[in-house]
Length: 58
Ligand SMILES: [Zn+2]
Image (cartoon, rainbow, N blue to C red; front, side, top):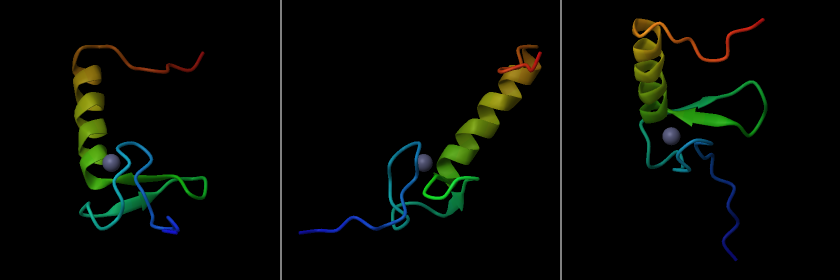
């Protein structure tokens, strides 16, 4: 059986061999790859520009 112990992006599901790099999240076994980081940065920039900030803390 193929034991799946490769590190994997929690967002797009690709493993570390398929992406430029993986960043570990605060919790163990949570990772995000470079592509998803780029995507998130892009979204955050757009949200800030449009004046909508997601998850505002009240
Ligand atoms: Zn990813």
